[in-house]
Amino acid sequence: MNSTLLSLTLDTAPATPPKRPGRLAAHWALTSGSLACFVLGQLLGANAGMLAAPLAIGGGAGCAFSWLFTRALFDPREHDARWSRIVALVVFLTGVFPILGLLEGPAARMIQNTHALGSSTVLLLTFVEPFNGFGRELPAAEKRFRVIFVAVYALLMGSSVLAVNQPAGAGAAVDHDVAERVKTVCASLALLLCGGAVWFRARHPLATPRGRRGARASQTPDDADLARRITRLLREEEIQASPSLKVADLARRLGEPDYKVTRCITASLGFANFNQMLNVHRVARAREMLADPALRGRSILLIALDCGFGSIGPFNRAFKAVVGVTPRAFRGASLGDP
Picture 1 (cartoon, one colour):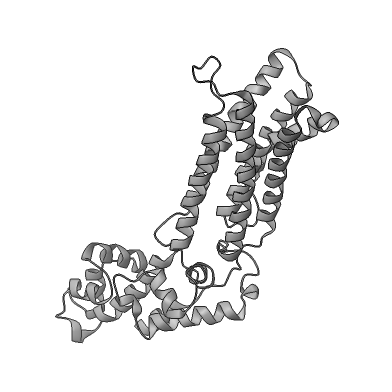
Picture 2 (cartoon, one colour):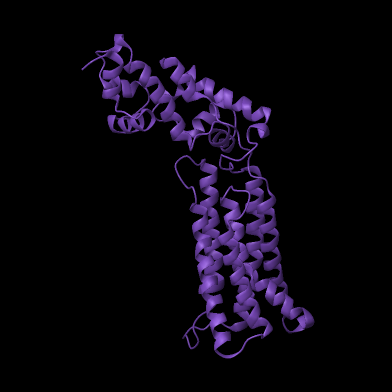
């Protein structure tokens, strides 16, 4: 019975392919186009002529587009959430009306205030997106990438918004020409940041959430082979018995990149993260030991340590989450103890 339950527990889930570049590529194009419009408008200045309004409209959409780009960069789903598109559209349209001079008086002020509020909101949300799914199971390279992205983005936004747009009458007012040059340089560097981010993501894709139709058919032979290799290490060599095991350790053992192992764990094997996979296998081994009459005299703490848990508390929580009862209750029921 225990071997049957163990086999059912460790069966791999249907695979889900990594995110296709369509959504990210589209938002990269929009963001790059908006930044390019802003830079070109700054460079042309009064010489823009008939291009002045189109360039201003395109450049003014940068906040909304950069937010959608950042969401696509750190959110592995293939499609945008509808609400995010609505917010971006509102920010874009409320920026268009003042440029075209379509409204005057109180209506124009209301639109301008809405645009300012919306732009500030998406600007703040852009800083939040890189922390979506930020946890211990993320590969070290992915963590570094996210931290660097936030740091560079904050530096660019701080230079172009906080340092340049000082209140009127400030004692250390920034010269207008210098301010415009700073904005142009920041926008140009933002173009490079976006390009570098897309380059990194193409080589370190995020796994798409499970549950999509046709996932089983989309599993490649390489995905299936890696899933079997991981499962073999856990079942036959019981590497999960090491309490300090990390994704990087498993990746080195397999000779694969960290991101590929993480993607396989969450997509092909169907676990929420690396730690959940370890706990499921550790608990499966603990069940066998707790139900073994020959180990009746071995304490639950020692069994927990044998299976890879660092202490009794995490073991009890993990065991109950998987099995539904405490280790003591499971042992009593398995061995017929009162």
